[in-house]
Amino acid sequence: MSDFEKKVLEFKNKLDQIKDNKLVETIRVEIFGKNGFINQEFKKIGTLSADEKKIFASSINKAKQELQDIIRSKENELINKELNEKLEKEKIDVTLPEKEFKIGKIHPVSQVIDEISCIFSEIGFSVEEGPDVENDYNNFTALNTPENHPAKDMHDTFYLDKNMKTLLRTHTSPVQVRTMLKGKPPFKIIAPGRTYRSDSDQTHTPMFHQLEGLHIDKEINMGHLKGCLNYFIKEFFEVKKIKMRFRPSHFPFTEPSAEVDIGYRIENNKIIIGEGDKWLEILGCGMVHPNVLKNCKVDSKIYQGFAFGIGIDRLAMLKYGINDLRSFFECDYRWLNYYGFDPLDVPTNYRGLSR
Ligand code: PHE
Image (cartoon, rainbow, N blue to C red; front, side, top):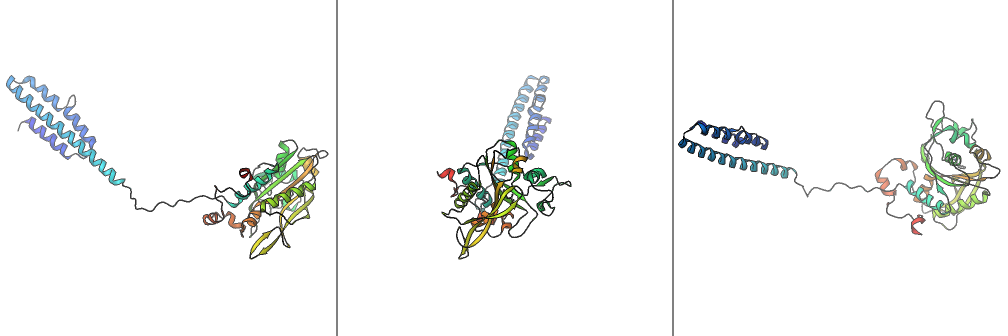
């Protein structure tokens, strides 16, 4: 066997053993590259006699053809192998059970905020917002709360600094202050949001929700307040008549102040709102104190009006028959699935769409 034939055989064996297409390419360059085996052999032809030339050239061409064919089929073989491996790996098992698909629901608190906002927007209230982290001035001082007021006690308020200047708002009333300070009267707003107090039992959670209302204009009086709340409660509970009473109360930021109770009775373990001889407190309200108007740069000789603060969570519990307030905030998916609302269902009080 000549050196040439030995070399050709060596290449054939090498190609036979290769398992990676990148190596095929390396060998292809070794054989057919500019300075590769074939070209080197052709260069030798010049030193041969005419007869030898013919024979050698034809054996080079033969080897060239052979090696080209081997490389091509090796390449095909390896590409197919790779493809089959990939197909094998990516095989989809159609018999596997599908992944659990959880559909979200609207939390009753969000639902009730939407309903209340719709009801008040029908009579011209717009929606305002304020931050959960408030300063002592907006939460207490501007609202005419004296320094020694029990609500300022460490046990009720979550303070965020040692100087007791920054806190988690204890009610939505600071939004009254913010609204009046940034605008000009008249004001007719509601402000739903989170509020915080250091309290926890079946009907109290450290975080809860309130909805503030404020209506300031030249001739707004207690009669307007009563009419407005009467309309709201009837709309919210979807009843034609409502038993409602104003109980004298005290808030530093309203004068006179009242708490509003609604009548109810229990029938077959269900609560019937609007009738019966039991009373349930649902909100605090009153005529905005002149000192608050003064603190908020509103002229109390020209302007006056009412404010109210509604406990949203309690209204949601009443309307949708939920017993434990704490369950609202436990983030239990099963609970939400049961008490939550379908986002595509139009709420009964959503007048904006149905009218
Ligand atoms: N801010 C009062 C509370 O949290 C409620 C309230 C608001 C009372 C507005 C009067 C006027 O209890």
